[in-house]
Image (cartoon, rainbow over all chains, first blue to last red; front, top):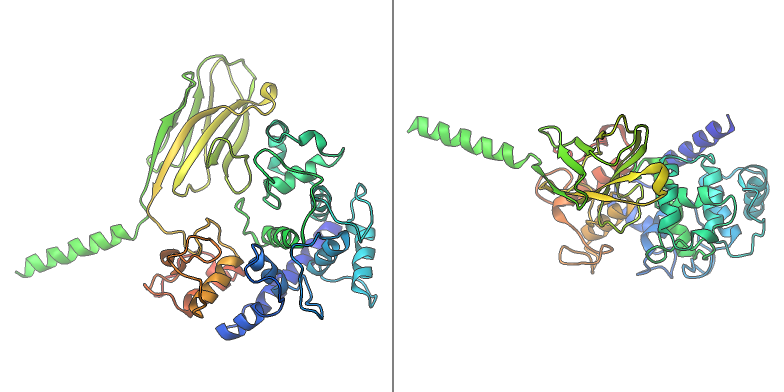
Length: 210
Length: 213
């Protein structure tokens, strides 16, 4: 029931956000999409950051910088996911709301609650996997292929394999080089924007699986 | 003279209709394993029969995959077009594979011993698919239809520098045939609005292209 309500909430947020981001006038859309973050022009994840901004996943800070090449922290990641999930909570402090929400509902047990620490690829996928209901799909049939195909699959922590393979199958993360999945690799804020938009697209039905 | 004009008109109409239809042709190239055959089952070339005729035990589990791209690529939701596991019945294994709609390109068909090989991937055939239909909505030609295509089309229409048909970088490239989602032969704000609504899942905008009636 809780998962159903979460999904309803997500769909409501998505519908509201996408409708709001689709004005009839081109000039209105262009002004919403551009000139907000001052440090993303030409960055490989520029479009993903702009889409996330349109969807309300991020706020523009007073210095106007997104800092796409800096490591994303647990707090950054959970804040974006909390925004996507309808911003539940009643504290004036957004980050505290996000952390409380995550601790109460979505934060996987195998991820340490350290909001200022850089988040790893494994931890990011564990959070999204749990948020998505914590159930494997058809990718479970590919476990043997992934175990053999990723040369560093032995480095995946106990209990983390289902989430990481789910994330890879759904193209939330890619290989860092052919045959390497890098579970302990860090996630830049630009990478985080890419992951979040791909996760949003899974709900929109834009995933190639659909 | 009148009859000749009518005949010409009918011929032109036929050609126009023909040009507006996606033409698909699938060529099956066999792999190295002579015990396995992959054949087209139907005239529409949408179902493929995979048969292994030797070295099969009754009840043995086999995994069949059809994956776009190179044999070395890892399977994902993006490049996997078919995946199924079935039991062999008797000493021959046969499975009909129903991949989702194939785009133009190269696909690898895999047949693997699911329980025993533990991840070994045995490429048994290659499908070469030739389709002349544009991928509508895929403005930058990266084979995906996402918000990125909408932003690139918006910027192209607003005449931002660096965006155009001659670009090779998918962050700046515009494939006009793909972006012309109302098939009126030109790129305008209408195409951008249709694409926006398609991405936002508006009820009447589910299928591209959307020619104006």
